[in-house]
Length: 289
Image (cartoon, rainbow, N blue to C red):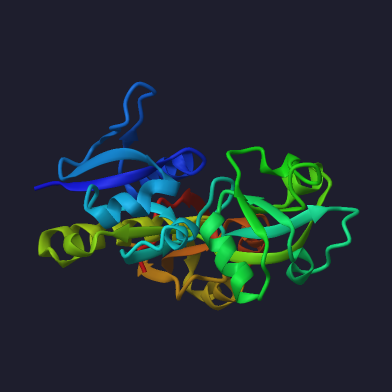
């Protein structure tokens, strides 16, 4: 038996392949094939655009796939959400779909767009947003380069952003956030009801979440004399309590802990002053909580 897994083609592709690598899976993508190789004989991968992923998972063409919550909502897909995986194409965080207008526009809220034209790739979600706010406007599907359409081809746009830099570069300002989105691991409802496929997906979920948990963290190993233990612990923040083990010399202990990578440069000097020796920093692939 194999699990048919959709990998998002396009902007999320590289970030997804890298996340799987951190989780212990090696995915090899070829420019000539839509079927990447993966070093797990129980998984069969297929590259699918994130915009279409939820539909193919719902229809059972795929058992599961990774796509944005935004595209699940856009397609109104009836799928099972296995996990929220907070990563995007540029960063490991959420993205926003925002309503944006030219900097010199008089529009101050969605209410000011009555009877106007809005360009977006997220058509159905935008229509629902307008309806929820009691606004009637024309929503046009945008095939790309949405930021350049106002003010000539549209009065406003609904566009996805991580940092807002592209909008600012095109002299647009954000009026409101339409919705927040993050990547999700979704499953076909019948596949989720299958015991083998469900266990396989739960294993994948655990490993992917572990890889995300490890981002920005490093491990530290060090040795310390028992007499200096208290002051070393005081200088050492930990994800939880550090692991402490005895060395062959009964007066010495070994400590192992996890810290934020950004704090390493300040913590190591403090540890040395507190009496720590043999400090080793090492990278983490995943942290399974």
